[in-house]
Image (cartoon, rainbow, N blue to C red; front, side):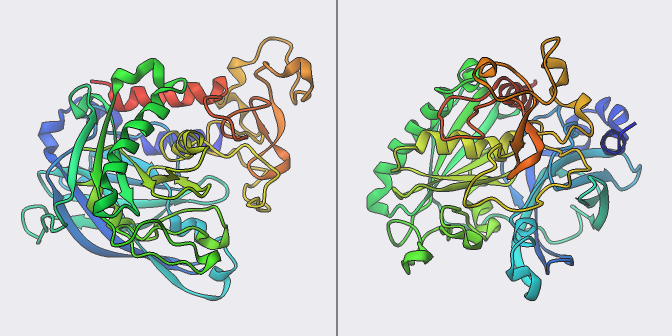
Length: 426
């Protein structure tokens, strides 16, 4: 049995017992937000607890409480303190772990304001946070006891930004709920944001496979008001005062567009029920970013806005990896070639059985030659994950490889549909 499968079995320990219980036995139908400071250097990290915040909505499923994907650089479990039963879990990644791979992390210590959310427990619970190492092994790095009835839990204290339903098809518990957040829109710009929400919802449902299951998706928007229009461009020495503090040139990469303070992002998102966050940035510059179960960003005014949305959302929602291997943002040795990556659309062939091997036609060579005859073939093409050698992708071209709107390969489409079903199962 592979290391990955052992990890998955560990993660879902208690699923059978938890699955026989009802949501209402363990949880109130609202959100508990756990804020913390995630700090460290290249080789060290620390999690320091912050505030506990009660939010009025629970946008997640009432039945799919236990993570079964095993995606993300981190994973958290919530256990009932009295029985030890696993009652909720999710995988996720963070901006901090990406920063650890930068040159700055070699010599400096830095902290990031992060946050995780869970359904609000009725009784005492234990939170456990794990980190995945380069060999895909999860290690417990933090734990804390939560006492809902005893400790101080804050309620929301953020500005009453306008919120709107963009396209709502049903109960949040039975739909994938996406919230669009405004960034770099002043009060006078807000009419543009609401138009953009409708456009971006259309970009997503206009692409396969989202369009096939559009009735399973709810879209809402929160009009975060900024003092200045636009967004910071450090490379051009332009700095804007915006609601979420997003900036280009994140970690020195010109087109990487992220907001370092995730708690500010959560403040806005929590005004509505949500599963996933997409920040629409008021800029015409090409750029964006996406981190699994964190958030994604993209600019509104660029001609490739539709591509930016579905590519970055592919990262943040479905855990899809970048399939390109020649780029100015490419990095060396991002993946351990002796370990199978957790992302569903790339492989090192170490544990190909659990990837898309079952989708190959009989006789498909592995690796698969990138020749014209194989342009529409599901195969194993070398070059992915920022490396030209040793990492393989399933298709010659895909939205996760090239700037192509509505061009997800069959393997990525399958991964997206599996995730949509997970969120929208009654």
